[in-house]
Image 1: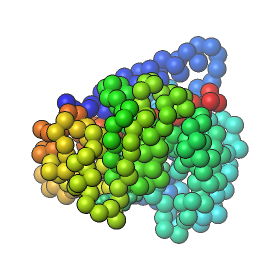
Image 2: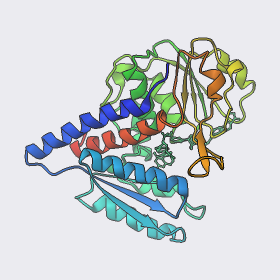
Image 3: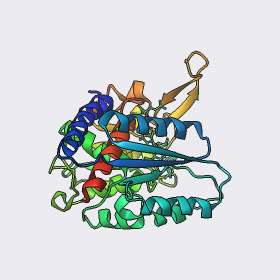
Image 4: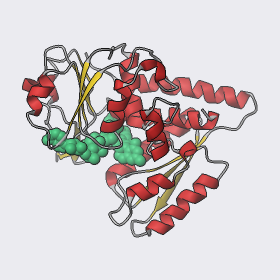
Length: 299
Ligand code: NAD
Ligand code: L34
């Protein structure tokens, strides 16, 4: 069965739209998200455009702040501080990757954790690890929500995560191993968590053998067809986070999008699988909206 992230994200968008309308009906202002984009990475521009469009659709006010690739780290820090102190902004993100001369750690650490709707500040990561209320990174939050809406249980399951990034691999591993009652606001199923999680990465030995023992595989590596059918147990759930642009002269944009999974051959073996596009991507976008609402409400 296909896990239809596009469809689920539309359902959640409708829920958020209702909530925003209710706030406005009470005479309150709408939530506001600011998105900082540095340079002209075409993929980043697409993702940011999707985020701004999604805000418009649900009635969240948005602001796109575009900065040139040659700005200094200091100038970007000034922008972060300005957003920290702007009372009209409930949440903001700095789209990654950043140009090489700017330290991602420095920038992320400067963001006020209460406005950190990407959940990437040390405060939010630490609070997530400890099972305290926090803003959770959008992609892991979206994956958890997708599993939850399809009623895919994780208790006692062996989850294999491929990739150890701060934005996906580490936080999704943390969320799914948590004791559920210590989990975070916005969870729609108490049953998510309690998994046995293995995190694999580029130095992992015999990835295939580890994957074959998985009930749920989450792939976030950025490598087309990394996960092949021989690595997947019959009836497993496969979550494909990867987004790769493959040149395709016959496609309207000159490229097509593929994930990290050999979808054609893995899908017949999987009980549930996410497509690319239309799987995790739209869930990331809608989770950012949920985080913005959470930051606005201050919980
Ligand atoms: P990253 O690109 O920072 O790092 C890749 C990770 O994969 C590393 O931890 C590396 O050790 C691991 N890896 C790479 N090749 C491997 C291999 N052959 N075997 C085992 N492990 C391997 O990670 P990221 O930022 O999480 O991005 C991963 C992919 O997910 C990219 O394609 C990115 O575009 C995509 N992504 C998609 C979304 C979404 O919403 N759909 C969100 C974030 C990232
Ligand atoms: N700070 N940087 C920060 N926060 C993030 O949450 C991100 N990410 C990742 C890259 N850098 C970031 C995103 O937003 C990846 N990502 C992201 C967002 C949206 C989509 C994919 C990745 C998305 O909309 N995917 C669509 C297709 C988009 C297309 O046509 O290219 C999908 O259906 O998968």
